[in-house]
Length: 117
Length: 112
Image (cartoon, rainbow over all chains, first blue to last red):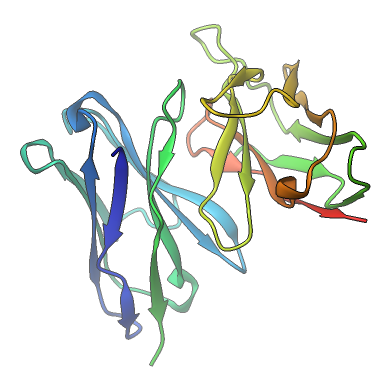
C-alpha cells in the first residue's frame, strides 16, 4: 500500500524543539521531491519546507527559516523535520506530502504538535 | 508571497445542483517552464487534504469527472457539475509556481 505515516508530534514547551518523521511505503521514495505542510486554525494551510529527491536542494518558508531543518534518508525511506525555538503559533497538524507539480499527490494523516507550557 | 483569494468562502448547495469556486492569484502563475501550477484540494471533515486537480485542469487518480478545473494566468475556477453528499468539506486552491507555495483561505461547501 502506498502510504506516508508521520510521527513525533506531541506537547512541547515554548522554546523547545522537536523532530518529526515521515515513513514512506509502497513507492520509490528517492524518486520524489518531498514537502512538509502544516495546518492550524489561525493560519490555515502553510507550506513549510521542501527537499529535492537526493537532498541536494532545500527551501523553507520565512516563518520557520533559521529554526527549521528538513532532511531525508532515502535508504530508510524517511523524511524528517527538525523545528526549534518553538512558539505558540507553531501549534498545528504537520503533514508530509509527495508530488506537488505532477500526478501522484499523496498526504500523510498528519501529526499534531501542541506548543504550550 | 503570492496571495490566493477564493470566493465565496461559504457555499451552500442543493444536492444535484452545480457549484463553482473562484480563485485569483496576486501574480501570474505561469511558470518559466510554461506550465501553470494551480492545484485544487478537497478536505473532508476529519481528513487530510486530498488533491483533486493539478496544473489547472488535470484530474488526480480516482477523482470523479463531475469535478473540473479551468482558468489561466491568475484567474481560476473549480466546478462541480452535480453536487453529491460526499462533496461536503472545504476546498482550497493552491499555487506551486512561486516558492513559498500558498493556499487560498478555503471555501466551505455544505448541503442546503
